[in-house]
Amino acid sequence: MNEKKQLEERSIYQKMTIAGKKIGIDLFVFTPEDVDQRKKLINGMFYQVQSNKWTRKWTSFPNLIFDRARLQKSYRFTQLRQFRSRYHSLLFLNRPLGDKWSTYQTLKENSLISPHLPATKVFTSPDDVLQMLKREGIVFVKPINGTGGRGIMRIEKCKNPKLFYIQGRDLRRKIIHPQKIHAATLGAKLNVWTSNRPYIVQKGIQVKLPDGRVHDYRMLVQKDGSGNWGVTGCAGRVGPQKSVTSNLHGGGIAVGMLKLLEVWIEDEEKIKQVKETAEKLGVETAKHLEQKYGALCELALDLAIDRDGNVWLLEVNPKPAREVFQLAGEKETYNQAISKPLEYALWLYNQKALKVKRAKKTSTSKERK
Image (cartoon, rainbow, N blue to C red; front, side, top):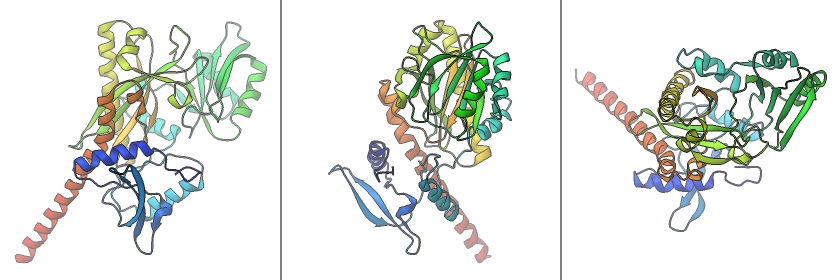
């Protein structure tokens, strides 16, 4: 629920309700505020397909929980932490990841993933940025807990060693247009920019298209109805003019991955190799993070692909949106993105039921002996 007490992702939950009914799953939406701890009941929100309306009714706790809450500074997130702690024994489809820095450190441990990670460190002072700029032509400064492209600054070296290009998006996603800044004032600018929250410094990958707009790729990795990880789809995102990010909520547009790669790389054989590399990276990332953090059912990877065809993993999002595939015109991928968590949920429920049945059978057998 947002600050206006309105249900976010309403259309997705409606589509999930319809898809769930086809395979025998009843779905309802709730927040920690809807839980009556004493009565052990939940005042859930149910979508009525025939009337196209949402209604509330009291119901028992669900068999499985698909946690869609994103990391944020709010009392609602505090309530969510308390709920997770109090009801940790419930069956969750997914668990929260850490922030950008802790996730980076976790991924760095994996020798298959590490070569695809841009150099990254915690921002402690402007010297961190200046030192990285000496080695790299472009550096990004990102909030450790930021989402949607908020609070990102891009810094690029100019031919004049005393000047830098900076541009970005403030915490309200407003575009900060490119401007030249003297090296002597860069430190003060960075200190103001990073004053309210922790940041990381990350090597920038050159991803500007011929028209000057930046682009990247959003890959969705999900578990299927057999409990196995696989790539559901990958779509390109192209940012608006003068933007340092390609996020759709910040004005970006969605394009099919192959269509974008044909413009960016052109070589057909290399495009095939890039796609295979990206998909292997996606599945390996999901498996590794699940091993470290616990149960997961889907992840979105933000990928950058340079002109040489190298694949870079920029960020991992444990609570991904799906509209990039719809906007890219990939209807089947979009439908799969909605139905796969439900198919996995049903498989997980059946696995648990089977374990309980086996345990009872073993117990009965021992009693007879």
